[in-house]
Length: 292
Length: 292
Image (cartoon, rainbow over all chains, first blue to last red; front, top):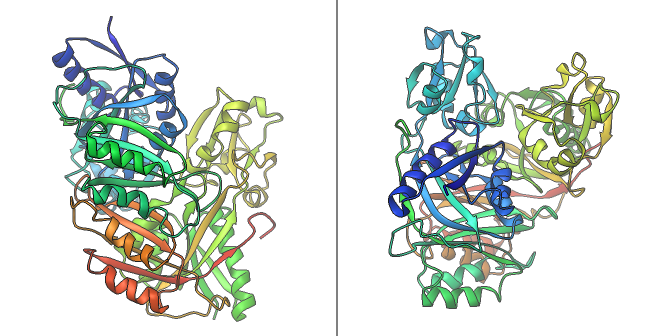
């Protein structure tokens, strides 16, 4: 039976591209084929795994320009039975897609707010008077373009191919190093050999700390620093109870099963209110453009 | 001459509400009137101050549900000549605005992505099949409502009044404690007595740290913890150079002119690459609803 994988839809999103890249890894590593299922939101993508509609989800976690995908972090905290199997880092190359003859003819540009933000400098230089319209995904506006020759969308090369639309300019992102990190998520009661890497290089977790105690965040971080465990990322999110109360999401460069991590995690519980460990995993670099 | 204040437009946004609340404080404290200038984006609102088009800007920093307003943090880091004068905390009460007879008739709901996210639970319960359309501001879609009786917008009570539209349901936010913190920003070469508070209770700053050094973030935080200076907030933002490199935005509960803060800030420079101090200020609670 094929592996079922949920991703943010519709077809042609960068999440679908990441899911396609992952299916190749899956075929190579465990010789299994996969079926992809687009969902209308990241929250619904993760809930589909939690509720056993699908086996896995591919969700964006962080972009090198725009930062954390907060919906992914917030949903992962809310749902109690998920774990990270693997991380994929994929370069993001934005195309400027339109049926117009020239870039100068464009009056309106549609895209996901993150993509608009990632091309802000190019848009200001090339089209200073254009109207920017946010959409739910980078592909949502593509069907409008054939009727409206003054409209453009910012989307992937694959999306342009899927919708049979011309790319006027390739690589319009302001920072050529633009990358997005995705997580492959499963339920926590299953175990997949989805990665051949001998070591699980990263562990992700989240915790809340007692409010309004000086140094309340320093103590958990010291636990890792004194054991020389590198913290590769920290992100705060509101608890949603009251302004000024936070959860902290942390990525560590170590496997939760290493002895020093075991003792760090045990000590960590003395400084945290609620602690959730999302699992240990490897990080793979993958390509973003191509035919999928 | 009146004080000129920029805010995210158009009329009826929560940023305009905060700006109106601030003008009352201004009138009380220094007996000056103010003129408000709506700008199309938060970045342009802050640039208007940096480039001396206006004296002050009112910008959202953080919401208790959705977290940081990353555009505000990123723009403040980029522009070199701004400082925080005051913080205002304002409750956010979302109204469900439509010309429909009943909530059940609604097929499409328009609003800013943060407002849609803050009412997610109510929308799922009340209108499970509705289409959610993101807009650039909470007020942008209001002019559509008179023509389309199946459309609704999520916006403030003041916006409904300004556009003469009925509020079908008040207070649809999922968390009644929903608050947004705003900063009043000026250039750093000016000094305003915009607050009567005898003490400046908070200081905000941001810094980058050497990449891939275990404990690189712990050291700066320890500086404050050992002096018993409470860290009320930490937010990481990508440097936009490469995935995994961050800036840290920190709010501290102390005045930068206190002796212990002076020594902490001096020690801090030994652990940071670039350090920017955005100023010390007081925090005022203010009301959100009302006639403005």
